[in-house]
Amino acid sequence: MSRDAVKFGRMSKKQRDSLYAEVQKHQARLQEQRQQQTGEAEALARVYSSSLTNGLSNLNHEIGGTYANGHVIELPKGGHGNGGGVPGGYYGMDSTQPSPDQSGLDMSGMKHIKQEPVYDLTPVPNLFSYGGYQESQLGHSNVSMGELDRIAQNIIKSHLETCQYTTEELQQLAWQTHSYEEVKMYQSKPRDALWQQCAIQVTHAIQYVVEFAKRISGFMELCQNDQILLLKSGCLEVVLVRMCRAFNPLNNTVLFEGKYGGMQMFKALGCDDLVSAVFDFAKSMCSLQLTEEEIALFSAAVLISTDRPWLMEPRKVQKLQEKIYFTLQHIMQKNHMDEDALAKLISRIPTLSALCTLHTEELQAFQQLHPETVNVLFPPLYKELFNPDPNSTMVMPK
Image (cartoon, rainbow, N blue to C red):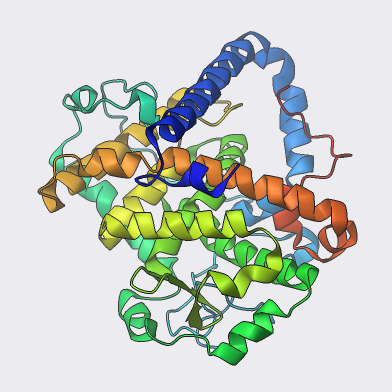
């Protein structure tokens, strides 16, 4: 996929139509898979549940608050340099923002919080599918304003507690850029070394996304299979959404290891299309001028999506998704004079999917040249999410 294929706003009509057609084709395939799944669910449920647990052990442990072998990759401690020896990415490791409290994360023997009554919401099919988005579908809901405010407060609090830099800290760092010598140092790194470094940092960011998800009211009420599937499918998309917080659109730089740097820093990765597309997406998100509460709600909406295949309880996921979406709509209408602001935000979702596909393609190409780096040196969680063991027993749809 070329760089232009993931640029919204600067692509030709032909390219835009082509991408929309690709998205619609993907949605049709997902719908077909769901229909097939309905007829096979009972036969596969037992096998799937067992194999999913085996094939996604690290993510399973992340959700439960424990770690494979007791020491997979722990969340860093804020205010202590690089805590644990994990280098900082665009969520920088030297921040004064405290890291998420991990006390009580072991869910074994822990009772779930009692569920509140389920609100009667008007069904909104394909809620976050760009091609199927219709604002007219969102006008009728029995969710009270008090409920919307409660959802917003919960998600915003969860977001702020799991972002390492505060807005004020990011503003203070905005013009601290890597020097010419530092940029040359990154450019001279061996390709496999820079890939490993970025994989570690992406994994670190994903761990904060996992913590964010766990704090969203209702997420831990989903069955564990669906928790894992939603995180596996959407964690990188949320990382990309959060990246806009640490992106400076005035000079096209992103926070990386404590300072801002441009695309040229990542030349040694050998995937210019991916790097350029990620920067374009971050700049596109910044152009929307989203508030922290809007970023938080959009992140939750991207993560909790019924578009993910092989959900065991899709209706339960849909109920939670609808609540989040109505809250996002409410906040966007309150904050923006532009009536199309929500539609513009939703239009970024196909781009997120395209970026994740491009990332997978680049990772596969890199692995062909450097299999030992991926298999031995990459973080276990990163490998399970993006490069599952071909010998794994995890059952996947054909």
